[in-house]
Image 1 (tube, one colour):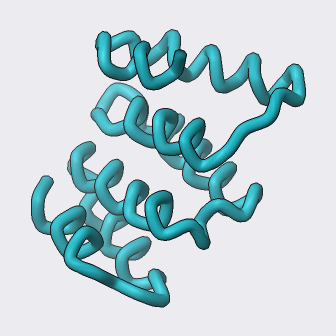
Image 2: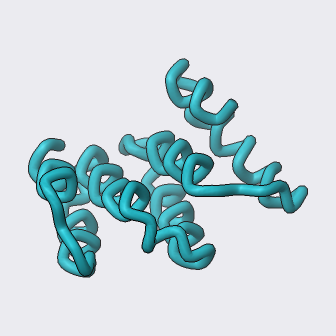
Length: 105
């Protein structure tokens, strides 16, 4: 459902859904947070980007290879290159996707 909201440009609805899922203690996984990170990838949601990124770390999903690259992409798309670079530099492993996330904004 979140991914559909993101695809349809309903970013706010996707974030509200994430909040409701967390409040109701519904199961979340890397797909949930990939959608949330994609939702925040614009200048309208700078504060939310940092919150979702913190949740990813808190829950422990930052170790997932797919999720690991997403904050770099998210920050870069929002023009927050200093944050994108910080996340990039903290990654233990970098691959082509990681490099492209940083330079492909």
